[in-house]
Image (cartoon, rainbow, N blue to C red):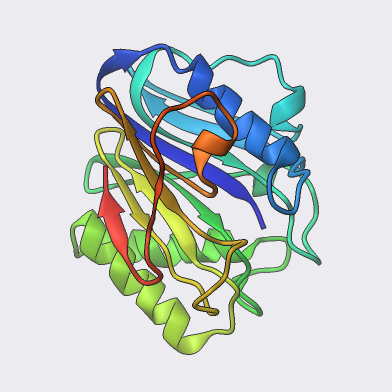
Length: 218
């Protein structure tokens, strides 16, 4: 189980408060701490990516000024090792477009090769579908295939092309609170996160829970 956050703003913004939110969620949120690595893929003046095997709440790395991105904080599923190769996001280029991907949950008996993870195979299949479909459709087809053919806790995922973010919630248990997604909007910034972010910062308003089986676009 992991924690993750996606955001999109109408213009480049100081994202220090967004970083602080996921850091706090990772340290103090559901099933915390999530300390088995973290990473981000963002777009401001250009694309920037980062992956670390350390804990996000122990990091002195700062997010750049940017307007769109995904951030992931890992808690390794049972049986998986803690190393940099398994840290999300994962990256690929398809039909000339650059993508980054992250996932929250466990898909059982799903890794393609020894030493790889369920998320890496999830992304491999998604990349194949991106060769034929636009991102929203590709993500929905891929998650549907996994849900129909494998045992899983959650196949929640974020996909970004550094201009938009596609998010999907798909849990095996309809009332799963550990693998939820919530949408929050503030001053032209839209955020999807694993937990309601207003619980972890001095924010006005309330998040809206994304329904199981629903996808959204930022």
